[in-house]
Image 1 (cartoon, rainbow, N blue to C red):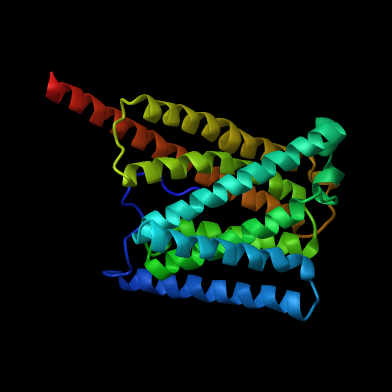
Image 2: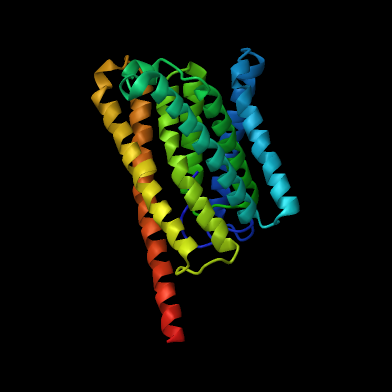
Length: 292
């Protein structure tokens, strides 16, 4: 999932030096994560919802990846967290693309984007992919809370993960709008580039004039515009246009409020990305002037 696009040190390094408000925020979000976990285990164990097991598999898969990176690559909590996030984005974006391509070939764009297909039907492997991704967001929330990788007394990244966990889990419990949520996850294509940039900078590769970095920025902007910004706007437009087709209840209000939040976060992310791009370009010009 997308983080802020600033330099390699964002987030907050270890839990030391936290303000009282930040500590209270951490307690609140940890409590909500525990309650979410209890809810999932209750559904699996007592309501016999074995189809939700991929959530648990996803959580422990990314936790295991965390342990591997921490023991064999780097012990820096931010580097470990970003590396695992890169793994998630890569797996999820590949899964989503394969699911969408399969439906495109089988049914065509027109049928796969029908209201009934997006709300009532679940494409093959879409449910499992959403469960697996849900497990990642729970793991990531836990890892950020454990190592203090957030800042502010209302940390946007923790709010983002909590909203996603609530929306994803409710959809999984009720088995509705699964395909809509798969469409939203196409943004993970852009998250791959965000995490690559962050890992690259933490690894000390910061030459903004190099061809690799220029190509990375090109792909970063390309995927931001098409895989994140425009795709989420189109999903929101689709929800508004199909509003009369939704049954009365909380599905449409939750979907619209969730997309409104995503679109707002995309605007802030775009601004952060532009600032980061300008900083790197300014740094490159300063480097050239120094050598002239």
